[in-house]
Length: 369
Figure 1 (cartoon, one colour):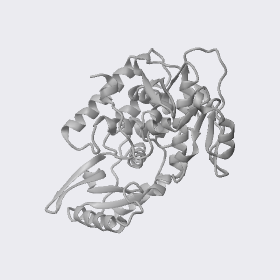
Figure 2 (figure 1 turned 120 degrees about the vertical axis):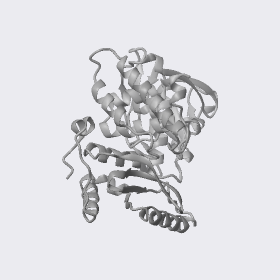
Figure 3 (figure 1 turned 180 degrees about the vertical axis):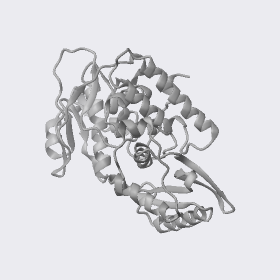
Figure 4 (figure 1 turned 30 degrees about the vertical axis):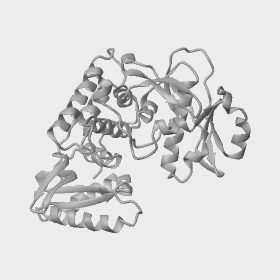
């Protein structure tokens, strides 16, 4: 089995690369004459010279999803305009990997230094700024064997682009991206390696560990003195494929960089009422940490029922002796306060968070408490 198939991509909840490509138009296509008038009318948005996106695909979506769509369109346009291999965070976007932040700039390896560097204009919709202008950042390609061709279907034509495979982009991200961004991407990449929605059974975990081993072996094969190898190894070893979402990966980042020990994802809690899987748990102090996000609770009429079921689930876990703590996205923006809240809650039971310095906490940790 090839590396790219071990770390296979899956469709995420938001719009996919395939959907975005079908909403794109290129001025070289004969059917796309009159592009200036369509941009002026707001029907299309200019992505870069000769590349346009149907504005309709942005309508009715949250701003984060709009930005991701533009990032995908920019990466596709850059890949199509010359001899460029999309890499790093931009390749991860094209591989439909969930991530912490949507890249505004596009990273790519330029196969030929000749030629002009395209500009990425700001994208507006209904006089509202969706994405500011961006840049094309050149990135050295260290693993040519971890690239592949992808066939994209635009509105009127089929074309081929080059990009890093998911494992190739994860290696680049681990070496070069901001550490928390890289950690979240690695968790999501390892999660996809399980080929299931939840990393719970033994086979899932074996697939995750095999994917991790592949990433580490590719890292060891890089040329000596390659920038970012040591920090990449620490991040790959600490990443956890049991995270179901970006939020859970971010929660894990906060705990691990603080040096909290004994963390388990998808921890099993059995009871007479059923078997429950806790997002993040610290079994040694019977602490269960759950994340509430819009992906779990939408605005449909079923939301009240979902909350009621979640409350019953929480009570069942608590009856097994666990202290259940629940957090939302905004809580993750203040790690120090979140850790203090956990410490205070455990202190009422005469316990505390178990701390022990690790390579992760020594390299990336802050004095949270």
